[in-house]
Picture 1: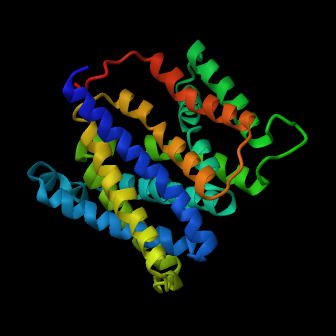
Picture 2: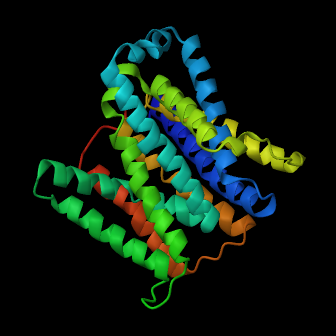
Length: 304
């Protein structure tokens, strides 16, 4: 395998792992430091968004597109829709799922998003589902059943609230992918994500003024918080974008599987989250849907 492809794989894998590690750290902050979920989301989006905008301003190509979208009302409306129903919704629902359940389950159920994207596309285009799509949906349903029940139909391995918010995480993650497609093509991922995070953080501040009060965290709590903001968001997202210059989006999507794997391993080892073998089987089935759908759309590993 060529060095260029290896570099892309490494960038995407490390970015996904950093994302995955952030979930258990947030769970730890919620349970041991009583960190406010709203404050975490608001401050995380605002700081990360401003840093991404500053990063875009340093790149000549990105600098030209940074303010271009504000010259089009259609783009502004699309950005606001993505901010509210994509960026903010996904952040809130994911961390809510972590708070009421655990990071491992929330991150795994987030991987239902490709199935929701397939279902949405089929309904919108009124298309006959392909065999691969049907298999992916069926595998996802079986995997979710095993993860949630542990293989016992009359028993829930997680709370109803954790299940509800976990599935909602998959739905909002799908919206996060679908809503900004045209914006990303025209203005680039850094500018759109930077503006959406910044606006989302400001929106949270307006809706929850009390969230602006900085909590008192000890040194370990501060380290955990700043890991979520810098390595877990800004660095992880930058690595994700950088990997697209070396390998295809399909390959990057497959390597995203490192995110729930990292969250699960950390949760089991350090947060005492208990997984039985059948729940691990459900996890693998859910993750396999990404591979099923990717294989149904053959694409070169190397980015074009």
